[in-house]
Image (tube, rainbow, N blue to C red; front, side, top):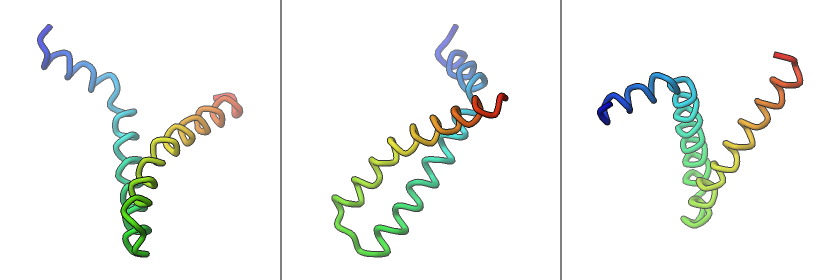
Length: 73
């Protein structure tokens, strides 16, 4: 299998998850940028808030999985 075939198979198998990841990342960066640049926060605080998106992402995904398990679906 060539590299292109491998990438195409991977994207076909995980396209829903990859789309969710992309939408979450774009939304997080947009909100953080609007808030922190709008208020004139220091650059280090802005970068910290962007990095906190990693923790927020895993927390959000974990809460979704917990909610699905709790509802029985």
